[in-house]
Length: 414
Image (cartoon, rainbow, N blue to C red):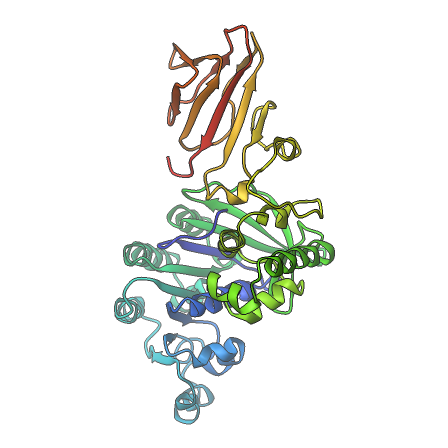
């Protein structure tokens, strides 16, 4: 879905069997690598249990753990309280104790006293809304809490993960949270297979919204079963290694250029996992010509700046008119895919040329085109540009005697 964005509130609907742990641990790790301040609010796990899950992350001095468990579900029991006398000093992360978590306003005030001290570029994990619901015993309290927190986190530019289960929330709560959040993701386990589903992704295109996508976890990394992992991950790693060495770069050189550790590059090349979309774009930028072969089905690595039309012919784009082709590989288009579209003499297309929802710019390269929009007929010729935004065309027609060729740019922001 083209990545997460600063200010996003992300709802993870978890189940007991399909844990969100792998997602928020990787989120915390990547945030730490970027130097982001982190706040982890725990309602369902004691700090002593949480630190065993977080592992080395507990030595990150910009991590603050807000403990709503010890005097909440933990009921102030001695083993939980003793943690602060015996073990707290052994960690570089900070702990904030909420001794009255049953009072929602106390949690809100304490949370934002912590968050406001961190400035912008903050990462938050709230685990979990379900446990908070058990303590507050009121659907309305959860709604008021979430409604109060989300706008403030958005204004602060925080990136927040909220973990809940559908079973613990009323339909009214779910509807409110789904409406307020920018991103909503369902996790589930069916017949032994974990899967996730993007329910909502505001302000961006997510081709797989509503589609159940199987995944598995290997060595602490998320792997989508949409790929043949054992073959495609290994193949990706081999191609990256070949291109890197061909450019005369060491693993350390590439890691430094894209902002990761040499160990990460080693693991990618060793077939442990795919890089993130952001890392892939940076790799493509550093590797330069030939980087398009990283995601091609062919094992041949192409050199040089030319992306042949013969390659474009192999990749007809989903959701586009049949006579359109990507002009450059989509993953190198910096978020704005570029296509060519051809209409033969006299050919008409009912509706629009794509199912893209954002702004588009068409440049007529050759021939003539007539576009019908808002009950009006518009004509354009070679060199003319056509802007498509909120009003969508209802018909395209080539009125000339020669083939019409157009350049179509799909903008991510309308």
